[in-house]
Image 1: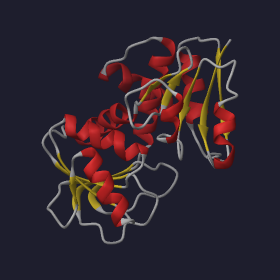
Image 2: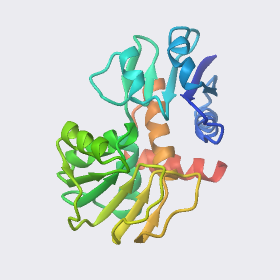
Image 3: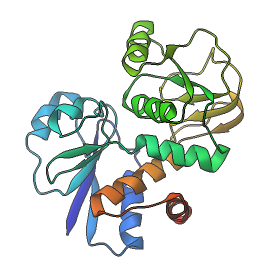
Length: 236
């Protein structure tokens, strides 16, 4: 039996086990997926003791901290294949899938990203790959400015944007009204910031499907992911 888990802190709410175990059922895999809820103070000890697992996902607050333990060129990792401790991120691909599914093409759009953590890193890089004008903001102005410099994007200062992608946990007061507001959180009500407003459940499912592909050496195109997404959504 193959064994996988999701690693994070204070993540009892996570739907990752339900999604991955649903995928194992769809593909008749002999595998199991569990939660490892590790306090921040115990993270390094936990990482040095991992054995007997085939792979794992990484969520808050460890997507950037995990990088020193894995083989990767990325600044943020959400998927680790333990054979060779190879680190990947499927957050950008998961976001791109769900935005295309719900809103259509994002290419060359003006987008405000709220936040400066691991998910914001992956999504910002995905937006840049789609030739978007990306602006960033956050509760800590210095951290937001440092993030903008690292990712080579602009700090938000009132520029006109079409879309907002919220990767932060704070309130949305002060954000401009836009065509589409996309909040990557899926465990709380969606703030009504845009004319159309979406949560991150589709992104969560899609990034899990892409992670599953890395774990099981399978490749999925957009139609494959959409078909699996619809099946899994009915199971959640």
